[in-house]
Length: 148
Image 1 (cartoon, rainbow, N blue to C red):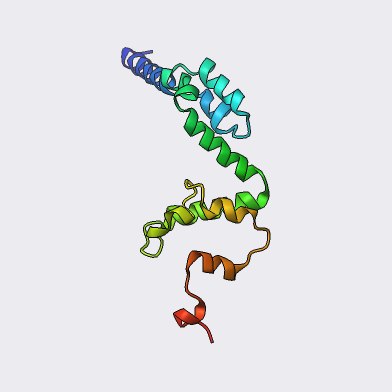
Image 2 (image 1 turned 135 degrees about the vertical axis):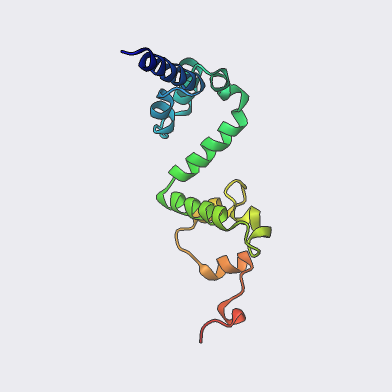
């Protein structure tokens, strides 16, 4: 092996080690792709397997954030309809929240708000569009001049 190749290899190894020190490759397998793992298992992994001190202490320093995350996950896993509507309203807000008609309705649509329809609507098994549009203060088809 030439000196240049050896130098390149050493640089790659050093870069890989630096990346591992920030976020280990095991994170993707044991945390990211393992979303149904219990909170205790994930926190144990972070404390004992990650090298980065920020990640090791994350369960303690970010307890409120993890509480919020796991409560949202529990809601989504509680029923297939809950997952469907949560994803719908989360995507609706993320992609349309800046629209003039939506801007002042953050609490209604943003899944980060506890009063969001993402949580309320998931309980509804049969959609009553008239009630929903009234709740949302959306004008009817007749008021908008749509339809017969």
